[in-house]
Length: 118
View (cartoon, rainbow, N blue to C red):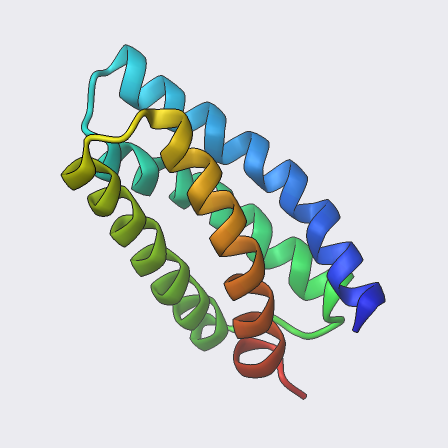
């Protein structure tokens, strides 16, 4: 499991760069609220993350069912953290760091034991 988590973490670094870049663009340039900006960043990053982790972390085939399960879980998490940040009027950086940390841990276990179990 350590080897899988290490791979998941490495892909997560790249995924985070994509997510943060899109989030900051949408929030600071387009001036969207954090929940929508976080969701936008998530959409770009989750596609990359799903396919890379299927191939390099879990060595499992992809399917529409797996993709929909993954995107639903991670999308809900992304939106809820953004809403929480909006409600508390947190700085954008707190939203990004919070989502990155929480999604790393929850996303790994959800992927390993539900999406890519096998």
